[in-house]
Image 1 (cartoon, rainbow, N blue to C red):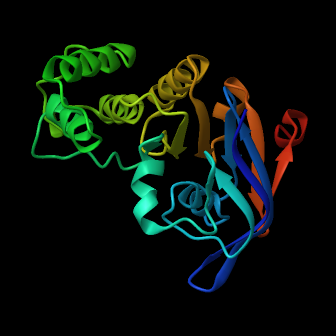
Image 2 (cartoon, helix red, strand yellow; image 1 turned 60 degrees about the horizontal axis):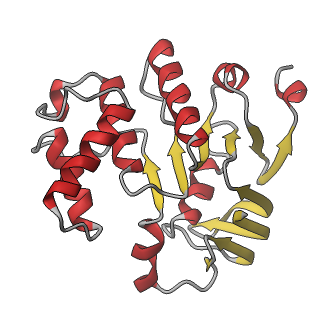
Length: 227
């Protein structure tokens, strides 16, 4: 099943062309890397998937939503089906890990406290953070915070996880652990789109690769980007 289908899409940022003639597909269970230098449009493309940035032309479907015509009131429903992982974590700094996750469940319509507690414990276990629920974000390392961000992203069992440079602020070993964890999450059913400029990670944890360059995006082969 195709989850994202972009055909001949054009993306602008403040009237400047970021990407043109974008042809991109994401299917169930796939792990896709978006690679390219800073400023080549990787993050802008991700933002169009969750309605943060509009598209100018072309056909753009995300989970059945027409992103060229989507109404603002429908964007929250779309985002509930997505898990978004930011490079800078964006955790609520004044509340514990548990309360950060509980906040998301409440905001997305969960009511039963026992079910909420069980789901929080389940996702913390999945990311190897079972004993950290009582901690505040500043009491965690960068790698631990990114694990909590992953836990937050998978709370509602999203069809798609969008990860924007999730290893950008981490050391090499911790970054590798996060990418491995994303691949494990993907193997359980969520398709993943991850932006990175770290080709070593892409080589060590293979997936489908699209490269952003010169206002274009193209699917490339592993032999090409290893050179």
